[in-house]
Amino acid sequence: MEKQPAEIKFSIAQNVEKSDEAFYPISISVINESSVDFSVAEVAVKDNDSNRVATGILQNIPSGGEAHTTVQLPGGIEWCAWKIIPVVGETFYGGGAASNAPGVKLTITD
Image 1 (cartoon, one colour):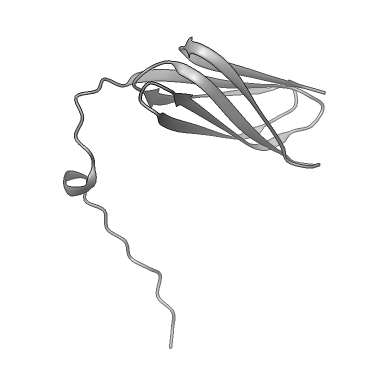
Image 2: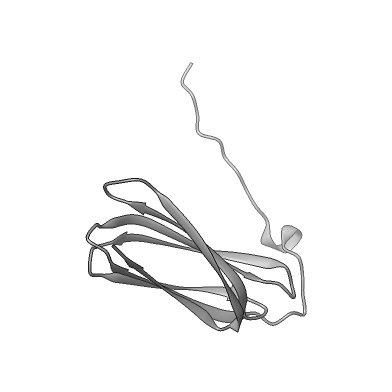
């Protein structure tokens, strides 16, 4: 018997929480000043007032290059955490605190 892929349907109208909260764009930048290329950079940011987390996933960041994305939160960033997966070498992690910041600019060096 041939296996079939799972078919999943999601109704936005029935499942999304309705909210009066305004969401604002939060910029995420990863600057690669290291000597290795990154295959993936995941950067999670959190707004403590709403207790919401948003994650930006950036791919294929060459040595000397940079990547940018935008996520949405109801307030500024109180903390961020990151996971960088280089093309060669071990995955590394980090984090940092902020005080209601409108974005994060993460620079990675050797």
